[in-house]
Length: 447
Image 1 (tube, one colour):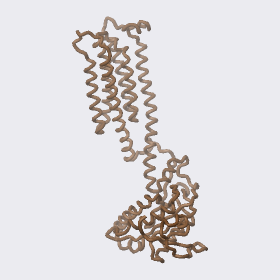
Image 2 (tube, helix red, strand yellow):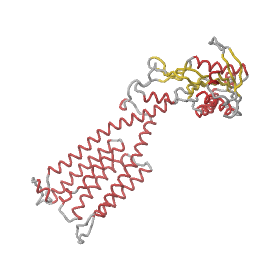
Image 3 (cartoon, rainbow, N blue to C red):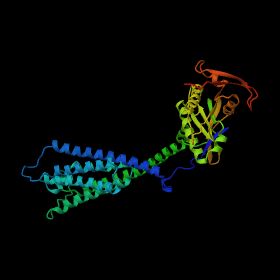
Image 4 (cartoon, rainbow, N blue to C red):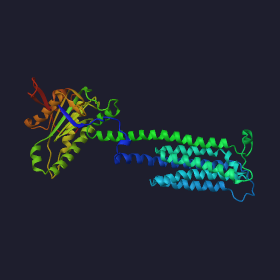
């Protein structure tokens, strides 16, 4: 039986409050937030474009005697502000204090725009309390949800509620002689009178929408962090177990659960470096590790290119499987192709301080079982069975026959005749098997 490096399954759901997020997770979340700021800036530019378009096509009711038309100036100021914010978002230079300032500035510019209506249209201040432009407040609040950070959404909502409260106070105290307050709803709707209850409803609506969105956003933020953590865990896990197994663990309802092996016909490819013991004694440990990493990187590529999955690195040996855990209808042919490509890739290559690595390969096809096994809190991915052991035995037989690749009868029989030129080596007794095994070699050449 051959096993891979052990992994420790997750015992409980990760809680952001109880752990310090790794820097890579923080960086991933920050990257998502910075991208969101670009989208927020685009929406702001869209809003100011709508403002400008509506102003241009709407009829102008003010007289030519008005010396100053504030609306175009306010819109121009907001456009410059939005463009500056967009440029900073693209450069990812929006700090927290800039985001708070942006949230307040959005509302301030909108309130100034609304306030200016009574000047432009030569009406008492209460006139601007009736304009539908206030509805854009909810756009500015909602777009803050794109960042997945409730702080800035709350800042926008509080700014909007406070701003509108100040706007109402300005109306009430702008004319000490007549506050224009009424309790008659019909009079409120048909004149410039002020209905305190209606303005109170607007402020309460702003605060409630802000609170509900902030609560939903806080929950969404937790899901975002969980998603980033799981994605990061999947990438990290795939470095220790086959990627397909890592994805199964992440997507599984049970997580890393033992006792659920997958039985299937597969082709096993087993490699080992000839004379590695002598090589390891002649190289310093640092050079040895460097040489092995170079070697593993080199031979891993042909395996992956041919559809194989590396199940284990152990010492100088590599165990790769075809059709488990990754489905492959032509697993036998692809395993032989990978063996040939490995030998070609190693031809003329030197490792470490200039040492060549001659690799022996055994290939066998048959029924195997793959899955997570272990006990307690530690499990490991395993591919095991008699056919796995036979592949390892075939690799060792290369030493006796002076070959580089030995293939079993089961593998040869699973390949279309004529696809490769096999050479029979006869039958051989293999330790652990009562019946002799017919084996073959193959000349190293192109696929």
